[in-house]
Length: 213
Image (cartoon, rainbow, N blue to C red; front, side, top):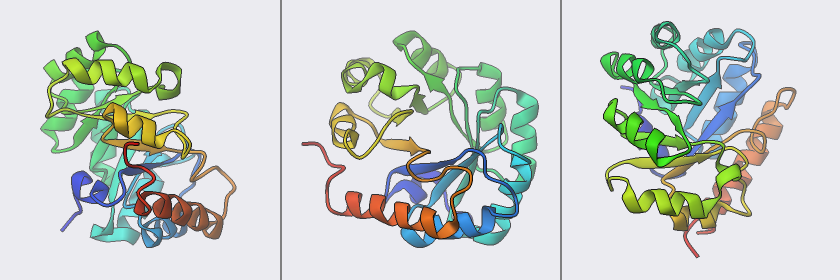
C-alpha cells in the first residue's frame, strides 16, 4: 500500500526536490533519502528523463515513500506523471486545469502561489495544499500575513531558498512543510553524500530546531 504524502511528511516535513537526477541513479539516491528519514521526494520535469526516474523510484521504494513530480505545467504532464506512478504534482504557478486533472486522477496538487489572489484562486480550483514560491523572495512575514486570511485547513509549504537558518522562522509563520533542493540533492552528488546531508537535516528536525522559536 502506498505511503500518502501526509504520512510521508508526518515525521520530517520535507519534500526533497530532485532536480537534475537521472534514472540510473534514482534508486540509490531515493534509498539514501528514505534510509535517512526523508520520505517524500519530487522529480522535476526539467530533469533528464524525469518520468524514467519516477518509475525507478516507485519500483525501488515501493510503499516506503511518497513520490511526486515537479515543474508540472499542463494536463498532459499530469497524466504522464500519474502513468509513471507519481502521487503528487508540484507546479510553480496556479493552473486550474492542472489542479483539476491532478484531483481527478487521485493525486495531490501543490500549485505555486505568491499572493493572496493566487492562493485563493488555487483553493477555488480545488487545492488544499499550496507552495509559496519563491519563498525567500517574500519571507516569513509574507507567509504569516497570508496565513491570517487563508482557511486553517489549507497547508502552505515554503519552497525556494529555505535552509536550516530560517526554517524555524518559517514554521513560526505557519509553514506546514518545506521543499528543499540544493542543500539535499544536486546533480553529481553521490548517494552517500545525499544520505549524509539528509541525515543532518533529519537530526535538525529531531532536535526540535525546526520548531517555532
